[in-house]
View 1 (cartoon, rainbow, N blue to C red):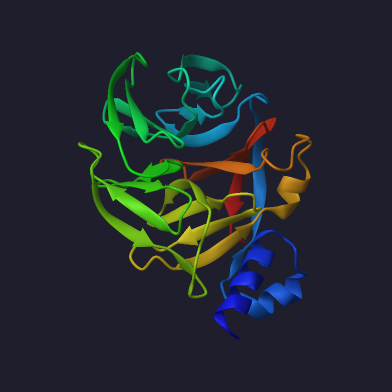
View 2 (cartoon, helix red, strand yellow):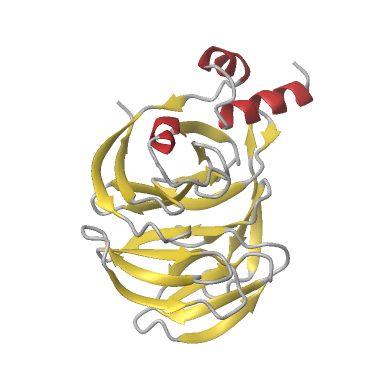
Length: 259
């Protein structure tokens, strides 16, 4: 099979445009089953671009040029207990905490905003080349996506880029890498406008598993299939809980991956 055919089959599988048997022939990466453990309320006006869980709360970044912001949310009720608007004219994107600071990316403006985690006061800015899509982190690094197959590695103190990971699936570069989450030594990544989450080995950049959430996506009634897609992954490491949601979805889902 040549690379062009393999690439086309991979994208057709990601967007659920091929039958499972056809995908199995062109995609050798295992697909992990999952089940819904619990359903929590989610603000249906939230154009979710970034999500993480910390200290008992969900932290969420919302996008679009009007109404973008960062918020702290009670998981169990969906109540917004704290929020701040993104500076006017900026399209909000990914979000991550580093110590007592929160960093929020903007989409195409190359500017990131640093907020005090406790007060949400804007305290600084950073600049970066290209686009900003999403972030996650481990104990020593921040990982940033920009819509390309390359995940940037950032210093958690200075936010300067220190390295990168070239992501491939079946030997082909994986395009449209979006929202990220660090889960048990792997990077989970939404692939924009698809119903699949990629499980990425950060040591090699290889996609080592898929989580196919087609049925979950199809159950949503957001009304705008071009934009209101699966986007938002958060992990509670202390209780081993994985949460997923989407743009303007009415629910956050706690899911268990595996049999």
